Image (cartoon, rainbow, N blue to C red; front, side):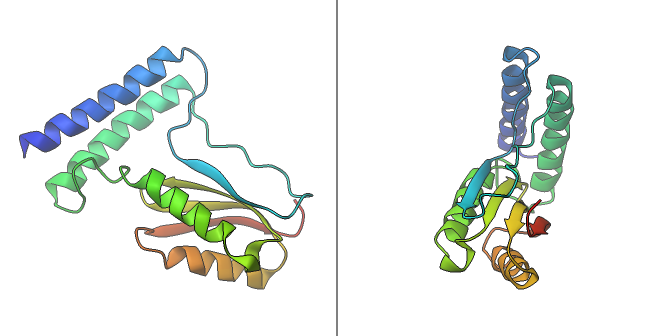
Length: 153
């Protein structure tokens, strides 16, 4: 295995563990989360995926292992499969926010390992299908989890 990969993943794991330890018992957010649209006021606000310190430690271990395996197999760039999540999340958020067809929705998204989870409310099944399809076709998005609700939650 390339020593550069080993050092990068070990450093990432230690950083995550240190960040978790420094926060005490506060819950932490590991994955990027954002609201894309606010056009459906009756939709219940979605909360970011938060982890307890213990859950975050377990997740950090799993993420480092997954990143090492991915790098060894040559399937991802140095830094692992989570490295591009913040930029993917922001790009998808801006795409949804800038699309007039979704102006009357309330959509939140989280990106983890190039997988985008959509939450919130849309007005119709057609709007839901269009949104999920649009996100799924974007570069860097490997999978879309549809947790959208048609109508008010």
